[in-house]
Image 1: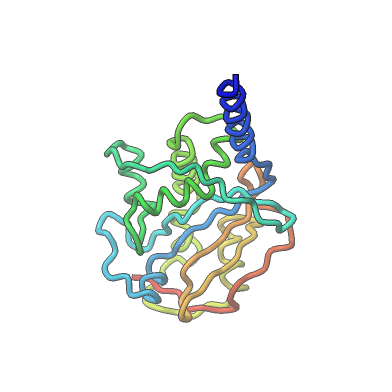
Image 2: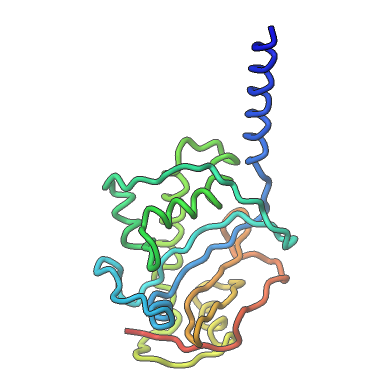
Length: 216
């Protein structure tokens, strides 16, 4: 009898913990990296030859709250394995890691952010999250920098306001945060509504006022 009660307690506790991972969110942050600037600032060596030159790469898509409160980490504990599928071929190309192994990077992004969406939308497995982010990236962000600054080459310094204006010519009403490291523009955060359109929230501000923009 005691064993049955203890087993019931474990089941209830496990169910409660599962429910704890399901979190409501009302927006997203789409974080994309600019490898030319990231590698100039962090000395990460040569880019993977499969990564397109002068293309943005993915950092992640993060469920968020417009209030500014932090969403708790989802932490599913899942290990990501590159099985060589078409999805993972795209991920190697558009979602590479410049500081750790790709699978460790992808696992971190899924376990910290993507699992919240898996729970929210009732997805089975992590492939849905990865495919959604890849599709968003290819549709909107991959060629963004070259579209915003056509014909640029070498290194030039741009202000946040100039960069925002250039990007908004490509993505009207885009709300962004420009991240810099060692004076180089390394990353952009795009704030999105639940429908993945630009967020109308005005609480976001830029991290740096100007930075060196590198084209190879």
